[in-house]
Image 1 (spheres, rainbow, N blue to C red):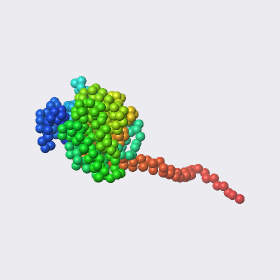
Image 2 (cartoon, rainbow, N blue to C red; image 1 turned 135 degrees about the vertical axis):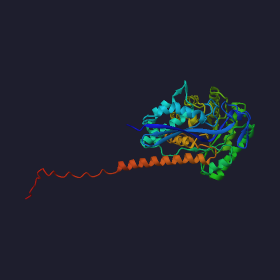
Image 3 (cartoon, helix red, strand yellow; image 1 turned 120 degrees about the horizontal axis):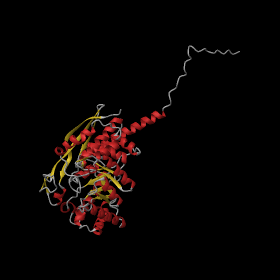
Image 4 (cartoon, rainbow, N blue to C red; image 1 turned 60 degrees about the horizontal axis):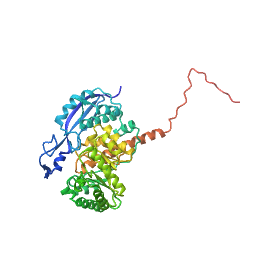
Length: 445
């Protein structure tokens, strides 16, 4: 009999950042210190910015080990077609009442089938909140890995038929609003992709003609050269939250011309722009991004377009990819629910030749970030987000260290197997003659 779950314990937690009402911010809520002044607009919010919450799901195994994952939701919950605000007090009872009884007694021998089963559970005809599906399937992956005494990355490679690759995945850091100091931190740590930038306001961050963002990109280019030296060439990746579309009234030819000036400002560094436009509905977003991506290619503009808003679920990602609606897709991990969907999303992007950005949110936890590292090691996306938080140091440390630990563990296990296979077979001594058997004596001469 294999390893089984004997009990399930849920605990309330905090995330690495905050829930922000994106619609209220776009409508003019302004910052007062670290808080926002203004009335919340999105249902469920009691303030424009409020503390992020999580729930840990711990699986007690019959061999004494504990596997766990963290339920968490994105910073901009309730926006862009996402599930509503995830508050521990609202959803811990759901886990205890509807999930724990189904988990108890289960044998944890295979991740993929279990994850699919729990990702599809419905309560009163509705699927569970994406945050619950996210955390429960993390715990299941950890349980299978503990039962097999291997890493979570190795479980995924085994079940999905993926090769083991011991090279690290490029890490992308996000600066938050402290986009100058935190860019310096990312450069000093030699992050492969930076800085995110949080360009979510036309007047204060982009500029009415895009001039503020262009100046910032020029500063980034010069700062990389000054602090990093000539042999350091990170990718510049800036999230603009649809503000380019707002500034240029979604006029695509004008946007393409503007993107060309950003490419020139970034040179010789590669530039990615995430969320250049946001038309606030899924079909419209897919259509306008497809047109914009096609136009940049036709005009020879080398800026890569990254899809984010309204591209939330595995089904969304497949449709955006099939519509050629971006050069790269952010796989915003909590939005996909069960983490088996994250695996499938990365693999689908790679099969179709579209960049895979294993992202997520600053509003996750150390645990969900660690589990995502294992998914990244197994599936090999183009980049993985340093998370949680907006401080650079903490998120980068969590993701980098988990990646290095895991890669070294797998490498050590491979080397041990190689040594075992290469070792000469032990000599087998000749059997001693049986005392009952006669011994033949041959005389010579």
